[in-house]
Length: 373
Image (cartoon, rainbow, N blue to C red; front, side, top):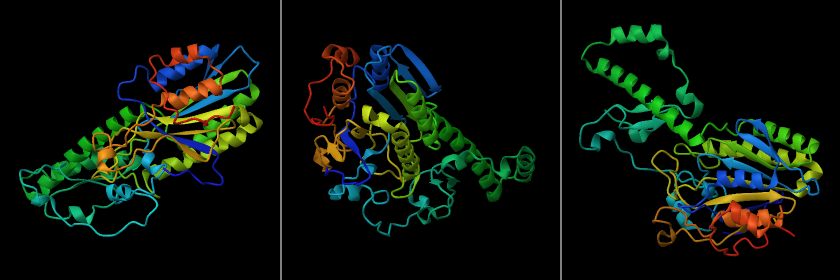
């Protein structure tokens, strides 16, 4: 992956992810790091906290922003030199003009019995590819998916239920549509709640970062802070330059920029890590999104960070280079860059790092130079 050359970006990207069987999770690392360096926890919100220390001799601090649901790193740091990236993502790839075209088909060509939720269209209109004689379930995207419709009002629902009680095709279509909508909305709500773990969306993130920056300005004993944001589980309508992911990255970027500005001189003593649980599949799925994958990217920014670079070993996107022939391969364990931040920035000893990351794999030196000393 080529270095980033953004004039207004002073961050570094690290190509890495946790192994599938790590002895400690990223959430646990934060708690242990706070215990080792802090004497008290300040709750900023249900999904954000800051840790104080009795030691006021150092002004160095670490802020972690956790993106729940697994952000799509390949659409955050785009491997624009890889033709396989564009082949695998015909509608959500960035950096190249989308090509028009497609294959027009119908659900009726699939053999077997068809149910009301066998074909699902997510968005304001049903695409032409799902045109045909069979029923297609259609629900909006995002928050609009669960927004009540006029048909959801009990008085209207009861009236239509009485009207369409027969066995004719219209009555059957009505009852099937009502049933499929209820089922899909329930499943969609449950899935997003589990992926986000209750974390708020990035909308309004800059307000939260401003509060954190002001707290740090008033309280020099704060050493570690944590913030969680949900909404990164882009199974559907991920989009390219526009879409669900872009709509989340914009407020995230604005919030990080606001945090850096609001910290003022304290930014020079701060390292900010933006991490997620894991990556997403290389190939886009049939819903214009990506599924849970393996390798991913981390952002690192702050005064001590040697930014405008991509650190790590790029594994490539050829089928033979993918993890299980479907995901970006891991070349750097996530604990390596975090350990570098703890050692070189927060000045943890080897013994302290060993307690935060027991049984940590050997270093690869892929992130050498990430933190200035």
